[in-house]
Image (cartoon, rainbow, N blue to C red; front, side):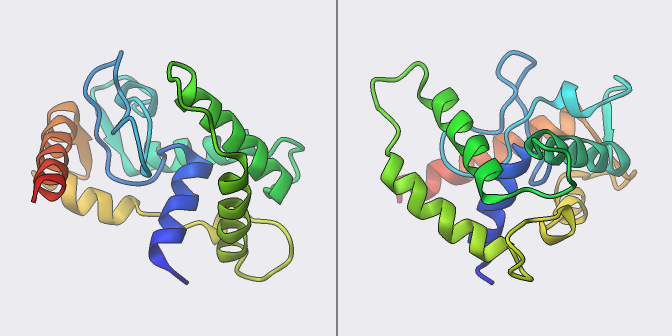
Length: 171
């Protein structure tokens, strides 16, 4: 399965419970405003507000975001539920923009993403079918290797990614 497609779907469904933890501030806490990737506020994942994100908090946030998309509570996400989540995300992204969402493009992408994620082709996605990038994220962002990510580590990782994206786009 295409790793890019899997990552895109995972971030779409979980809105950032998986991926690299990066936030700027409580007000502008998403990893980035456009494109694919995790979108969440550090403070929301840090459930006990101790200033650190643990793997357990990341996992709990991931499950909560999955359950949020599972509108009928059956433990799986149907293509219709996925479509509803994508439409809501697109509307949010375009709320303060003159650009309008491209429905045809979204439908095509939705079908491709759903087929890629539905590993057993049963017409639904369960959380086990979604990639969990927490271990990889912790390996990159937890620079002091204490099994938790501080706000400072998160901010440093965000800055590093931002600089990398800037270099990539300029050269």
